[in-house]
Length: 306
Length: 306
Image 1 (cartoon, rainbow over the protein chains, first blue to last red):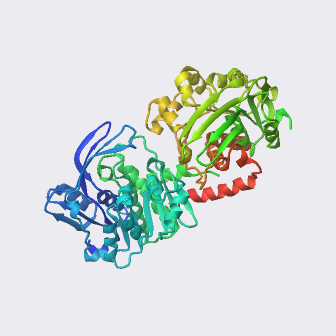
Image 2: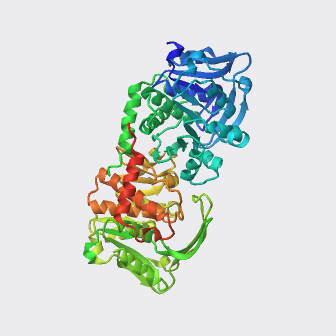
Image 3: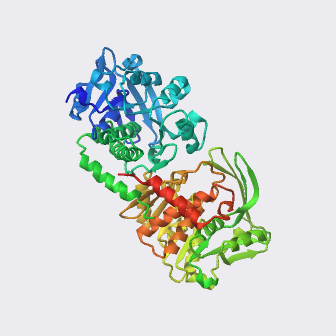
C-alpha cells in the first residue's frame, strides 16, 4: 500500500519494556504508546506510525508491524539505543511501579511527517510532550479529527504547552485522576466541562478496569470495561483503547457523536484482547470476527432491559 | 393498607447518623440500612420494614416512613437508645472513616416478622449479622426471591454463619473488595463464580461510583453508576441501590434474569437521587416521573450505538 492511503496517523513512543507481574517476568518486549495504538487501530483502518527507534531495534518487531499492515514511513531509525522502560505490577494489576526509564533516542525525538501523512484525516497524538504533539499538528494540512492523550507528567511540567495543545484538538483523552488533577475538580462531570471550556468538543476519561466516559457539552456516554477473568499485562491498555477507538472512527470516516460512541466501544473491545497477553501478543492472529463476537457479547452485557 | 399487602420485606438497621463531609456536618440524622432500603423500595412496591429503635427515636422519622407508605408493623420500639453511628468522609467522598458505633438497642435485636410478612414474596436481608438474616428466613413461608447483603465484618467474624446463609439466598450482594476478600480471588469473574458455586443463582457486585455487575452462571451484566455533579452524602448508597432493586423486582413480580437486570437499573437510578442529599432528604417529594426521566437519560448514556 502507498503512504497516500494512510487514514490514521499515530504519533507516540516505541520502546522495549521489562515487565514483572506476580506470575511472570518479561525482558525487553515490544512496547510504547505508538506500538499499542497502531496495533489496535490496524484492525480497522490503514494506520501510519510516527516514532523513533535506535539501531538496536529488533527486526522482528518491524516485521510484526508490517504483517499488521501498519505503514512505517514515519518510523525513524537513528543511531543509538531504543527507549527502554521497566516496571512492576502489584498483585491487583492496577498499581504499577516504574523501576527505570531510559529515554535514549526518544530524548531527541522530533516527529516529522512523511508527505502522505500530512493529508491524513485522522490523527492520534499519543502521550508525548505536548510541544511535540503541537509540532505534529503544525505539519498536518487539515485533519478531520484530532485526539490527544496526556499524562500527569505534562500537567506538572508543561502546563502551558498542554493548554496550547488542548485548544487545537477535537478530543482530549486522559484518565480520571489526571482529569481531576488538571482541573482541580473532583467531580468528573465538572472536570470534563472545565476542559471542554478550553476548546475540545469531547473529553474522554479512562477509568481502567472501570471503563470510560465520554463528555460533550450536551451529553455524557458511559461505558464499562469488558470484564476479563485473567489480565496478564495491563501495559498499553489505554493506548490500545485509544488506537482502537481512532481506527474505528477512521474506518467509519465520520466523526458524529454516535460514531465516536461506536468507536469507543470498539476501542474497549480491542484493548480487552491486548491485556490478555504481554506486549502485542494478544493481537497476533486476532481476527476481526473475534472482535465482533466479543462486541456482540458486550452489547448483551450492557443492555439495561428497561 | 393492611400488612397482608406487603410485597417486600426489608430487614436491617435504623440509626441516627452523625456525618461530616468536607462541606457540611449533620448531627443525628435518620440513617441505617433498613431506612435507606425501604425508602428506595417504596417508589415501586409496598414495603414492610423490620428493625428496632429505642424510645428516643424521633416521631417525625416514623411519620416520614408513614408518608412514604412504608409498613411499620415489623418495626419494634423498645426501651433504650437507638443505634448511633458517626463517620467522616474525605474530600473524594469515597473514603470514609468511622468515628464511633453505638449499637444500643440494636445489640439485642432479634427480628420477628408480623404474620402478614411471613408470606411476602420478596425479602431483602440488609447488612446485619448473618445468623439474624437466617433467623428471618426461618420465619418466611416460601419467599419467591431472597437477596442478602453482607460486609467485611461478617466475612471476618461470622464466616460459618455467612456460608450457611449464602446457601439459602437467590442473590448475594456485596462490594468488589468484599467479593475478593470472601473468595480470595482477585478477578471479580472468578470471585463471583466461587460464590455462585455455594448456591445463589446470582451475585451482584457493587462498585460504588463505578457501578455494579450482576453474575449468573451463564451471564454477566455490566452497569455504570448514574454520573452526578455533586454527591452530598454517599451514606446508604448501597442500601438504597439494593432497596430500589428489590422494590422494582417486587413491582414486576417476576424474577427472570431480564427482570433482575431491569430492577438493577432502577436501583441505580433511585440511589442517585439519594446521594444528592443527606439522610432520606433526596427521596422526600421525589416523584416516579423524575425517576423515569433520569432512567431515560441513563438509557441514552449507556447506548453503545454499535
